[in-house]
Length: 246
Image (cartoon, rainbow, N blue to C red; front, side):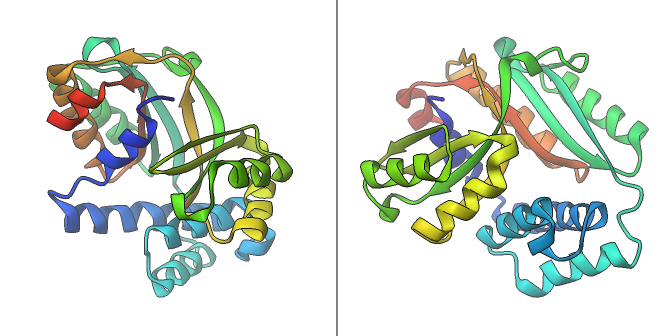
């Protein structure tokens, strides 16, 4: 999607970096605990855990934090977490998917709903915007991993569906169910990826001007500030001029 790599750049905004970093560590740790709880605590035998650990490492989460998160699962922590997805609309009808992991469904629903309404959005029913996205595996490599042809060949060989290469790097797309196999094959061919995860990839996008982009960022920031929220995805599209002003 156009704007996707720009979105990645927005997510790395500096501002409240340390607070955001400790929040990110805690969200990644929670995912590791839940993944370990749902399967085997050995990442080699548990694809979801392996991907969670990989994503944590790519965000510089220390090894002892990762090990502690896995141990929590065997100590019975993470029992009560359930994964709930919320869908809604932001400014100018942009679609928003909010993935949460919570031990209190009522608290999370209430917070997500009020965050939408306070920031000019509307929480919809499940499925209200989901049809505008596809569930995909996403593997990101830096531009230094190779030229577009090299990456494309490695990706197709690994069983991926598509590659988007730019000066920012390479985004490799695959079916959600193939992510573990594709990422393993890519790792063997290209080395460690920058990021490997399941994402919601927009199939239709909504163009936003500067004012609506600012409103959307405010909504996304507020949602991401909630400890129960694991990830926020939108289908915005914005011009380079708007992104530069932002």
